Amino acid sequence: MRIAVLGVGTVGRAVLELLAETDHTAVAVADSDSAAVDEADAGLDLDRVLSQKEYRDRVGDREPAEVLDAEYDVLIEATPTTLGDAQPGFSHVERALARDRHVVLANKGPVAQRYGDLRALEAESEGRVLFEATVGGTIPVLSTIQDFDGQITTVRGVLNGTTNFILSRMATEGLGYEHILAEAQDLGVAEADPSFDVQGTDTALKCVILANRLHEATTTLEDAEVEGIIDLPGEALDLARRGGQTVRLVGEVTADGAVSVGPRLVSEHGTLAVSGTANVVELQTERAGPLTLGGRGGGPETASAVLADLERIRRETR
Amino acid sequence: MRIAVLGVGTVGRAVLELLAETDHTAVAVADSDSAAVDEADAGLDLDRVLSQKEYRDRVGDREPAEVLDAEYDVLIEATPTTLGDAQPGFSHVERALARDRHVVLANKGPVAQRYGDLRALEAESEGRVLFEATVGGTIPVLSTIQDFDGQITTVRGVLNGTTNFILSRMATEGLGYEHILAEAQDLGVAEADPSFDVQGTDTALKCVILANRLHEATTTLEDAEVEGIIDLPGEALDLARRGGQTVRLVGEVTADGAVSVGPRLVSEHGTLAVSGTANVVELQTERAGPLTLGGRGGGPETASAVLADLERIRRETR
Image (cartoon, rainbow over all chains, first blue to last red; front, top):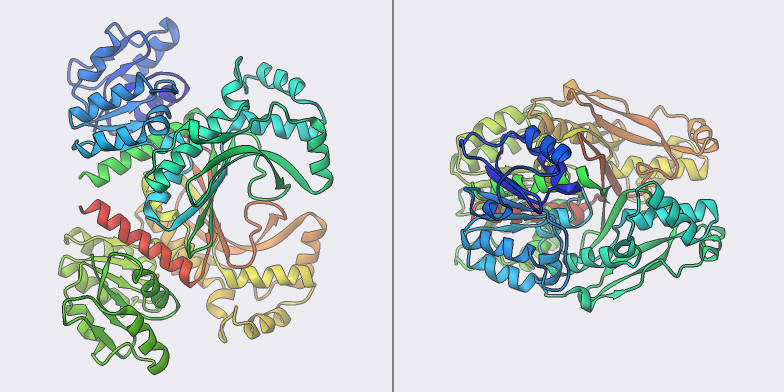
């Protein structure tokens, strides 16, 4: 299929690397202030685009907006997640659907904050919107929810690598939050401004998306009950450990669609006690017990979920 | 969709129970020597079919073969797995495909023993063959392999509940194989003739199916290297435990498609150390780390995988 990519951050870059190895054709790529558009109808040379990005910090010499008018079949929207009205991501999706093109989202904003609007636009379009990459890195959680149509009742998961790292280190080193955060920032595991992760916003957005998909609801971040890990005392982890437990930032979607996120005690050897960049999701089914899906978060992993969505679109629109 | 069901064993029965709660219409059901066929075009009353099965040990007063001629969209083949030429399951699939109908298999025979023949028939037909229920109960392992088109390199898993139960009990009770087997038979966890499970055949068939799907190969049981648990001394489990490990019957598919099954040491708190009816599969991806999928085996769980296949067919042939 002919692919356009918006956004060349960690995920976008990994998507381009993976795309280069498939039989898809990249026809347009944009970062925040430049674009490369295929004019020879031969497909873009993605190695060239990636090296331009690396050495000139631009992907080409065209305007980003030109990508939206390119002749693509699927738009991959991998610009940064924004809250509120989820712009400009939402309008990118809107323009693609208005042209009856498919969209694969890595940007969480449109599905977390404007799910109802998105589904309404999709219903009017020949194009479809998939968004497996918005939750849980490589884990195929949304497609599993879809396949188990109506059979899944609740979801619980550990979905944020930065908080995982901090909580694991706090437990093993017996050090407080501030100290470990500084270490995580030095290692590049935590961002300079880590609030999106450590205040639970990232996990909450993912759970809102799960709730929306599970119940075809229009939950937003504002409906979620969210507590981060910044006030968690080191002693809590000591105490947990002596009881054979540990603490993780757990997100939950209940059977009635309520979303909550907060530090929770989990069994030390249990399913949810993952560490590092590992993500895990537990789906409860009505009749078939729990399903546990684990995999890594991170750029290449999230990009692999984008590619899996392309595969689904190819198969389902054949 | 209009559904025909062949086979009313543990899985077939659970399928009928689940179907009753969906918007699918059951038009024909057969066990080994009777059938119920919908004549009023109103759909079968599945509660009635199930109670006939329970009290009369027949599902109706028609001949099983009549089901194959019924006006269905999807045939669910849930007759017992047979080896060799996989008959009569294979001919059921053949007849459905010849009529351009879809098939959902719970019977492992046709996909483990005659994968090439099956795909050749499917290529000539408008009908599709799905078989998620043949491996790992409720776990969506085959659809994940499909979505990650070519990105999965190897698979390892614990896929047989009976051997899981026996190995867990041997480890905790410190008793030998024969003793625990007798207990498992008393509890109904192991069959009177448990050889299919304890000799590794069941796990091997599942791995052969994974290998075939992964590589579009035509591996059969005869190509697999299979060792069961019957010669495993109780002392091996003691020894494992003292090293923080335990033993599970692990099936593997390597990157070159080779299949092996045998008792393996696994870390006591690791992913593969599942117990009871839990199944687990580890998929290695080329670029996105490992994916771990866990869920239960058993009748209702396997039936839920059949229903998920129906959902996929509905979506992909819309």
